[in-house]
Image (cartoon, rainbow, N blue to C red; front, top):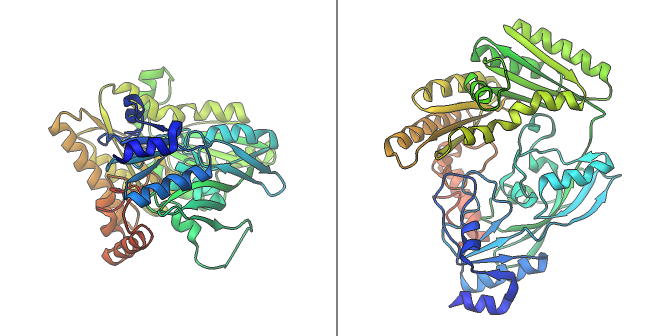
Length: 451
């Protein structure tokens, strides 16, 4: 059997232990676990090349695995085969302070990277929330709270090394700040979720840690007033680093769980970066005026990192507290995104669509990304069915508004059925053609993106 042959070839880099197979059979999503036949712990780029060549020669499914923090089933090996773990490829190879750039292996974790970069006064801006691996962020084009100012992962990568399905190592992109050279293969591979190959290392674009930060939270009597305020702030030219929305159900849950004593009303949380406190204080004054014009009923703000952390603490706890509050239940996470002008509409639609289920609505309002975490007992088919109906309603409405089924979590297992409605059959056929031309044997993360 090929498993025994592979263990003989790669020796201690392989494992078929049951606990290891279990560990790499799932992510943070509700999707069904699926065990690989073997887990390969890559230690360097050549290891990745060698194991992919082996998989290609023997037509074995192969799936990359970073930190396992994804929530759409992206790294679950649904066809079994080989899982390639990048946990040992975790080196920060070199920092280039003058170029505001860093070269890293794919297994480096996001938080570890920024802890190291802090001493240079720099940081990698996309913030997926979880301590994701860089390779996973590249594979899913992860983003998060700061996308409105700094962009998603794809906007913060200069160059990357990538292993194709036959084991060929290719270079994507270059180190220039701009380029009109050839096809943009770098951005084709970013977001391909391991279906076209595996990232091994990347040169990432960095930003300077702001000299000063400020944060503010504004409460409103109703959801409509809160979300309408978002576009007004963005149109004002204030350039927020983040704008988040939380509905009253989220606030009530946080109060009940952690005794935060927050105002149990819909709110928006904002963050601003600047060179000095005076500028930030002036921005806050402008924000107060805009929020007041939109029916704000309460406001809290502060300048400085401690104040910023105080105000953001509730938002950062949201997903963790939802899971803690609903022990024994599973969650479907809506990850739709729409044009900013349609954000009030999609939030109000989501509120109505989730009125008969347990749901918590929040999201990255600054870039039109709505999350609705819907929870139920997955073994109760009636309850779970209601979640699936609510999820589908929201996603279809987002697409109808000209948006997307997934703003940052990827297509994975659950969103593939929406591709045609989002892009049209011809565009999806082009994607399939690209997949087939690069991965003719369909060994790279099969069962993802395409039905």
